[in-house]
Image (tube, rainbow, N blue to C red):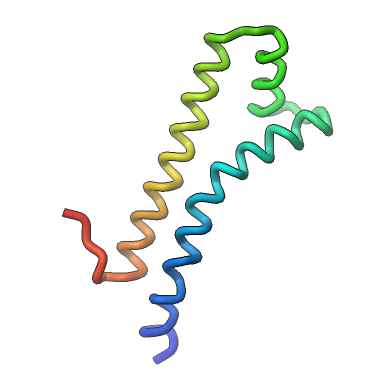
Length: 89
């Protein structure tokens, strides 16, 4: 009974939080990569900002925006799986 009724309703706020925390994850990753000098998109973005390479910054911004959009799409799909009352027409 708990899994069928309570878990589905309790899972919706968790899905919302996880879907929106992906954007903060990318921002935090950029800071961590810069501090510890790890190679990655965040370190590359900071380096290109220092060099004022604007086309590369715009491209990286688009890549990160697409990742955030895909994470939100995944959260919406998880909504429909977790709660069958939610339907997208």
